[in-house]
Image (cartoon, rainbow, N blue to C red; front, side):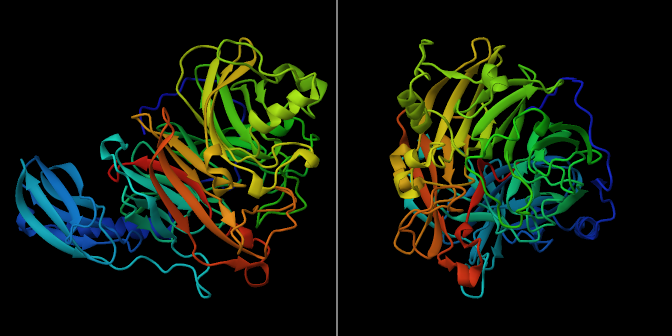
Length: 571
């Protein structure tokens, strides 16, 4: 989170609102508001620091969060220290300021299934201590549980704590759970499945916004906090199916579509970007990318995710979008075109396409970027088939996700990092890779709009080979100290340990040696990019193989993660 500033722009028109807006009468919001007000009213003058009112999980939605209710005669600064009594987990330490009167202090970072100690200090001196006993984490997958809590194991503990970025790893699994774990792999926060788990972002006010398939197919958007309190419930006319991004304190940008059907003859989805004012919940601009890019260009990868209408063409599949204010651009990732592209923020005019040059019609040729080295020398001669193949296998991204801006205020320069899933790595089946022979990676690109060239100063992920191959989703985040947290978040294997695709024949080649079962084994790493040293690694799995007969045709999506962040429990 940081300082959000948005320039005044004349944006494209929004779509007419039907039901979109804030549901001020939402039952969960009203109930949570009443719970908050009731608990605040229970704090009496007798509830001093030494007699705090401790309330664990007040909304029944955040089992590792509690309140300490304290009455203060004036403004004072205290320190909260949270740790398990056995001291097996890292302590969570937070400075807080009490206002005069009643205060509800969030107590975050409790450890599950044990006694925890909250110590309240002033100027380093302990004033009071409280024991808070928590329940076990939710059940993991089994014959009876389909979307359980992940099984987490640390496969490479950190040995150089001073090199680690501060904070906890926040992860969101598709329709499972949102949670945070510390650098020892201990879960320190989660919310129940009352909240969407998938499309999660933290706002600059410390709250989260989220949508998911399970919550009215991405049409309900929840704003909630670390205590598990729902603050605002947004009703959307059209799905926010991927990657909400905060533009400024009251504006978000997210991939969208015409969910009820387009106003023209096209039958497509996931090919637009919506801009929404959070203060009203109303759309203030819409970018229809079907009017900008070539709908007829064959998709690679392709496919229809579980829950989608197979008769609607998902030709573009926008999975991330953001605004580059320096160059007045909307930048977006279209997975099914294996392209990252930029359009003018006001006119929607196409500005660049980062993609293989194959299969683009003549009208799009001026926008295709040319790969160059750091000195500006061309890396490939695209009049030669062998150079086209080399760029396809090594330079371009395929089925990419999570294009995120790297701040750069130089006019004409657009810099971002992307998760390159790597599907196929060619538009030709005979030159494509099977999952066991493939890899995924994160890539840093620098686009020069003045010369229409692109450099690639950094990549990481080939080192993992098929162990890190993720045919869909996945994410990464650059930390303030330069470290990169990366989540290879769809690493799925058959019963023989062979890497497999989420959708064989669409996301990847059909593999004749693929088994009949699937289980995810996802990789979370924090790396030093200068040396590409892995500072920490953990793995998440369902621990339970799925198959089509028992779990349906989407069984290969066993467990996936869509987002990863590293940040403090306290905003």
